[in-house]
Length: 361
Image 1 (cartoon, rainbow, N blue to C red):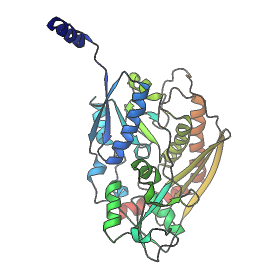
Image 2: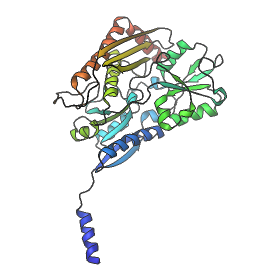
Image 3: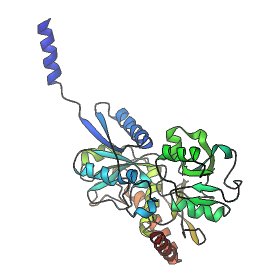
Image 4: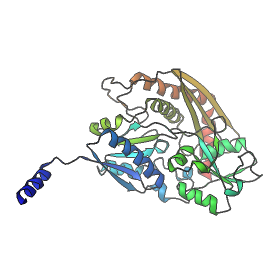
C-alpha cells in the first residue's frame, strides 16, 4: 500500500503543472461579474489552463466626491491595472471598453473586444416615480448622471428637468437614488444593469434618437501587453467581428475629435447588409449647441481569418490579427471621415468651449 502511495505521490509531483493565467479587475461587483464572464469563456476554450482573478482599486474608485469630467485623468479606471500588467503581476485585464482611452500607453493593447450587450442608456426611477418617463416627471425633478454626454443631450430634450452629478459604483448610485430624497431618477448604462441582473429596475430605455451612447458602451475589452504574443493569441479568439468593427469606427471618431470624459461626444453604430452606419455628435455642456451627422461605409463582417503579420497591427489601441485588416481599416476610416466632417462644420468650437467651461467650474 505504502509503495503504491509513494508511486502516486511521485506521479503527482512529476505531472506538468497547469499554467496559471492571472486576470486583473477592478473590485466593484459589476467589474467582477464582467471579469467572471470573460474568464468563463476562456475556461470553456482552454480547459487545460487555470485562471486566477486579482482585484484592485483604481483612482476612479477612490475619488468619489468629484465629477469624472473634472478629474482630468484619461485613465481613471485603468491606470493601476495597467501598472500591474507592466510589472507582470497579471497577464490580462478586463475593462468596460468605454473606460479605455483611444490612445493606450506604450506597451499595451486591447487584445479582444467581446460581443456587445445593449449599448443604450437606461433610466432607473425613484420608487415613488415608477411608471413615469423622463417626459412625465414633474417640473424641476432632479436626475442624476455622472456623464456630461448624457446631461448635455437630455437637458436639450427635457428642459423641465435638472441634471446633477452622481458618483459611485452601481450599487452606491442605486442606494443614493432609493434612500436619499435628492434624485427622482438616475441614468445608467443598460448593459451594466443587465449584467448585474437588475433589469427589473429599468423604467425606460433611451433609444439612440433620444440619447446617443458613449463610444464602446456595452462592450468589454481585454487589455494585454502588446508584445505578449502568447496571451494575444489566447484572448484573440474572443473578438466579436461586428462589435470590433463598430467599436473601431466609434473609437476612431472620438480620437480624431480629441474627445474624452471632459466633453460631450456620443455615437450610434449599426451594421446592416454589409454597410456600417456611424452616427456621431458633439454638444455644448448645456446641450443648447450641437452638431450631429451620419455616414456609412461598405464593410463585410468577416469570418475570422489570418491576413499575415503587420508592422504595427494596432488600430485605435486594438489588435485583431484574426480579423481581415481591410475591414478594420475601412471602419477606422469611417470614424475619421465623420469626425473630419463635423470638424469642418465647426465642431471644434463647440468642443473647445465645452472643455473650457468644464475646466472653469
